[in-house]
Amino acid sequence: MLIDHVSDLEASSSQPSSPPPAAGTVRIAGPKPPPTFGQWVNVTAILLIHVGTVIALMRGVTWKLVALAVASYVVRMFAITAGYHRYFSHRSYKTSRAFQLFLGFLGTTAVQKGPLWWASTHRVHHRFSDTERDVHSPLQRGFWYSHMGWWLGREHEHTDLEKVPDFAAYPELRWLDRNHIVGPAVLIAGLWLAGGYDAFLWGFVVSTCALMHGTFTINSLAHVIGRRRYATTDTSRNNFVLALITLGEGWHNNHHHYMNSANQGFFWWEIDISYYVLRALESVSLIWDVRRPPAQVLRRNLLSEVGERAPLLLKPKKQKTREFSSPVPTPAPHVTQHTAS
Ligand SMILES: [Zn+2]
Ligand SMILES: [Zn+2]
Image 1 (cartoon, rainbow, N blue to C red):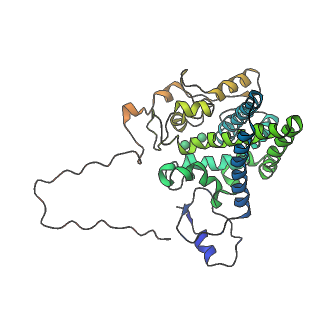
Image 2: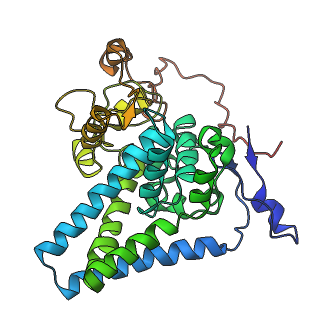
Image 3: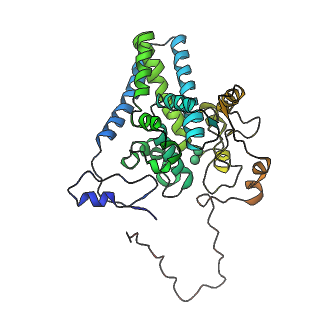
């Protein structure tokens, strides 16, 4: 088991430049190190996005500005779900090197860091779902941590390229990942030049605020609210509302059941707008080898047949009451010490 001693080490060391722990390590309680420059930047940016959204609403709104915000939201949500998630994290289809770079660049405009960072942390989520090594489990660390806190955390600040060797092999993607701020800067400049201050406010600020919270609901709510079809060992759920606002990501229990599928809605009534667009891209040969769940996978491990398997959702079995109480007192429950060894 990987153990994160960084907090303890830094508390007793004069070298503040110790590398942050890799995503997926277990934290041991210790004195908190001061926030890094990057953390301050992220916190300030999120505050400004929210303050800017209030300013935009106070300045008044037109249908044109709402349409601009919605268009910016939909395009960038697609870049996150179909690009960062289904392509860079799960390789659920293939494409050319040029279109891969385009998807990566479009994803950076969503202000969710670079494609390699996003994919590396997401792969940790699948590997350790709902265990203490998960990067954002609401059942382990609560709603706000899984919604935004983990994203701002020190331990998830840097990209772990070892988790994404397949895409880290491309120098242009490594550059994009390091310089992910270029995408938002280009978008802001374009909006301001085309439509001025209000276009910037609605096309970037308001839209990004909605986009962040929309995406983050999959980390915070899609493991808490909804129905479970498959007996995955995590607590993932299918949620129609989340699927609508995230263009298909709300079918999260389906996704944990078969994560390499390009479609997360497995049946016709499970609306999955990102997948519809991917099918269109497939029809014009921009993408190919699109992966879909085989028929036997759809029928395998149904919760209705095999029962619940998520440890955090299994109710503890009731102790059978003894007819006669033992004269020997039951020992107190043993408290396990969490040691570093
Ligand atoms: Zn999940
Ligand atoms: Zn995933």
